[in-house]
Each structure stands twice: as structure tokens, then as C-alpha cells.
Length: 68
Image 1 (cartoon, rainbow, N blue to C red):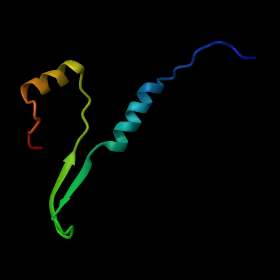
Image 2 (tube, one colour):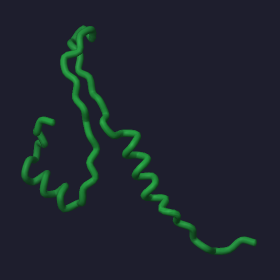
Image 3 (cartoon, rainbow, N blue to C red):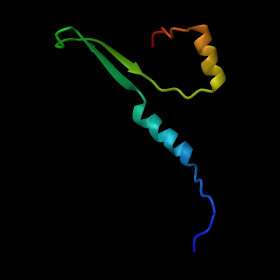
């Protein structure tokens, strides 16, 4: 009947891929104070990188103020 087998089926990888496709190329819109005119449109991409590369990027540019 019930066995104690563990089934993984790459569940973690599937969840990361689903999260990435849902939130990839997010678009932010900035409007003026009245909220009528669009001032700026920013596309925010998702990137998958290792911890070392993430740490290196933070130490090189702590504000991450690079234009896309």
C-alpha cells in the first residue's frame, strides 16, 4: 500500500522556473504627481546567477545604479 519512498521529480527546479517566467521582464511605470502622464517606463529583468557573482556585483557597485 503506502511505501516510504521519496519522490522528488525536480520540484524545486520547476518552482524556480515558474517563478522566473511569471516575474520576468516586469515593467514599472512612473507617473507625474497628478497621475495623468507617464514620465518613465522601466523594465526589470530577472537574472539567475551564483552567489559568488551576486556578491561580486554588490561589492563593485553597492547602489546597483546601472542603466539597463
